[in-house]
Length: 67
Image (cartoon, rainbow, N blue to C red):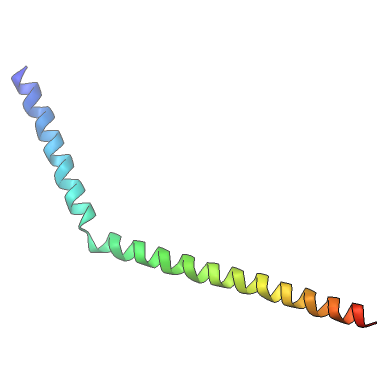
């Protein structure tokens, strides 16, 4: 019984140590930053497409109303 508890505690200790190493890893931080930057760039690109489409539609509407 005691041996089983020692094994469980050892597994928990290993798990905690792995979590500390992963959370402190620079690669994961850089990966999160890069994903955020890429997401921002994609969002800006998408919004510019929507804005361009809206401006085009408004200018065509002005031309149609003038005629």
